[in-house]
Image (cartoon, rainbow, N blue to C red; front, side, top):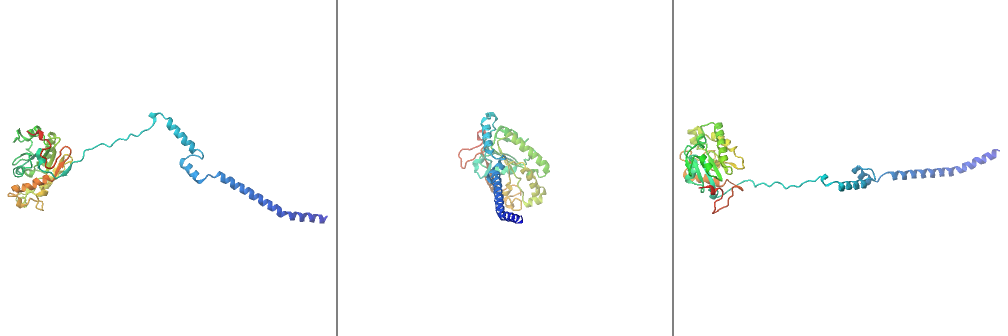
Length: 308
């Protein structure tokens, strides 16, 4: 009996390796099947990225695109949002400052005091017109009754004729007035001139300096006082149809005074030096669509038709 049991144990022991081998094969088989199933369930990285970007689950991208196209095609015409393309508005070329010849002044009017008289007498800018006189000032200008070109007074002249350019030079006779009073009156005069001459270029010329000696003798004509008043004139220029001209740039001894050799009384220029002022105006002229200019033109341009 003991011998039989021993034999059965020996047979079982001999078959153990075979069982272990079968068990290992079975385990490997099931592990391989699990890895295969896991791979089939994991989406391809490129496909997953595209779907994530679209926000759609797998397999719905093409369907969604088809649905969107169908919806667009079937929308009524008035339901579609359209963008109207409009051309940018056209604007006129901005005015430009350039050098001209005397033909530019054909339709110009020069308004001022005795210094403007001197410019007119000794260096007339082209065929311009002028309204000026000794001791003229900003306070009495518009109410003056000087006869000019068939009109009594500046106000009537401005209402009776149209000019392409108007040059204003006033202020030396007003140095004794406060800058605030001068500024207020100057502004109102410019506005009134503009009301009569809506299409004209208005040039606001700086008050000219006096000599150092004249300033010493008469401190009211100091450079500081003149500069202060010029600053209030300059702010009235808008750079569109009203321009400030710093004429002192052409008549300066380097210390912001009138050169002593240019004048006999410290205020008014000798005849030949008015040409420097004249040249400065030629070099600082505005040309635009309303105020054309052609070099050496034999035909005047501007508002000449209005001149008597």
